[in-house]
Length: 336
Image (cartoon, rainbow, N blue to C red; front, side, top):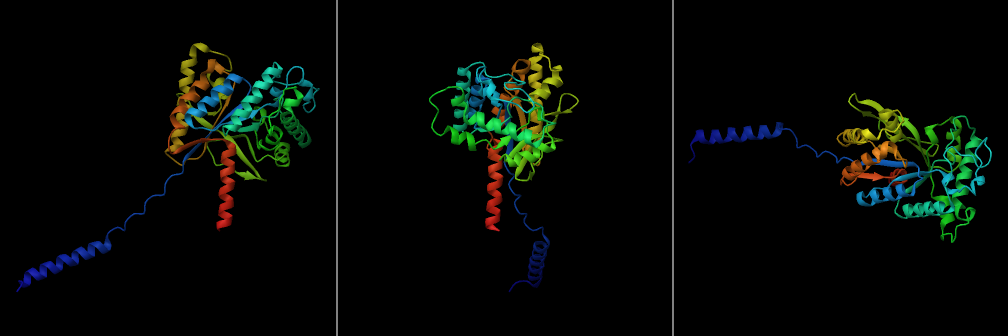
C-alpha cells in the first residue's frame, strides 16, 4: 500500500505541472515569410551598341531583367532625321542627335529585338530629349505618336530589309512604359499618358523607396533619394546625379575608383536597408553614357553580381512589376 505522504506529494506535483501548463505562453505562430526584395534597374536613351551588349551580358549572368527607355531619334539616321518633328520645333531637330548611319540603326534594332526576346522591357524616353514641362497635352500626344510611328516603321523608314516577321505587331503593343527626359513632368503629361495607352510612368522622384501608386490606370514609379558619401547626403539614385555630386558633371578619371566605390556603397546600403527591413522595391537608374570613365557601370555590375543572384531577391523590369501587381489584383477580385 503506498505511503499516504508519497501519494500526497505525487498529487501536488501533478497539480503544479497542470497549473504551469495552463499558464504557460501559448506556442508562437511562425512569422510570415518576407516577400522577395525587388530591384528595378533601368537605362535611359539606350544608344551605344556596346552598352546594349554589356547590359544584356550582365542580365544573363545574374538572371536580371532590365528596362530600356529608348529615345526614338536613335532609330533615325542623318538621312532620315526629317521624319521626326518635335513639338514647336523644325523637322530633324534633337537635343541628343541621331544615329550616325543606317547600319547603326540596323544594329540597334537588332539589339532591341534580342533584348525583347530575352524578356527585357522596352520603354519610351520620347524622341528628341526635349524638356516638356511646358508642353500641352496635345504636344505630349504628338511626341508619343512620333515615337510609336518611328518604332513601328523603323525598318521601312531607313530602308533596312528584310523587316522581321511580327515586328510591327511587337512595336505597336510592347511599349507600355514611359520616362520623361530630365524627369521633367507637368499636368498635361499625366493627362496624356493614359490616353496614349501607357500603363506605367517612371518619371518621379521620392524621398526614399516607396510602393508605386496607380492612378487613372497608370502606375507611377519614382527614383528614390538614397544616402551617399561620408555625410550620407541624399542623392537621386541615378548615375547622372552621382556624376554631378562627385565631380560637378565634369570628367575626373583619376578618381574613377573612388567614385565607383562610393556609388557601389550607396547602392548596397540602400539595398540592405530594404532587404533587412520593409523590402520596398528599390529603383536604380542609369544611362548608356560612360560617365567618369564608366565608374557607375562598374558600381552597377558589382552590385548586380552580388544581389540579383540571391534566392530571395528579384531584379525585374517595370513591366514585370506592373504585370504581377495587376495579375494579383485580378486574382484577388476573382477569389474574393
